Amino acid sequence: MMITPIASGLGILQRAEQQLNRHANTLARLSAEGNTSEVNQMTDALTGLKLVERDARLGIKVIEAENQRVGSLLDILA
Image (cartoon, rainbow, N blue to C red):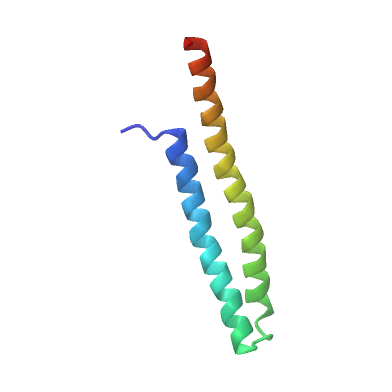
């Protein structure tokens, strides 16, 4: 079974979504508890959100690159 670039890009986006949910839940829980003593957890969650953004952009770029490649092939064949 061959893994296509689009499948790879979607996999990256799915993992980013899972991480986004995990970090957002951590921040929401800490905020609801009013627990400001867990600065390390808050910092980790905020840093994680920034990494999620990077990963999501990477997934999108992979998909866009494949779409451009397919479009170029169609232009050549037309």
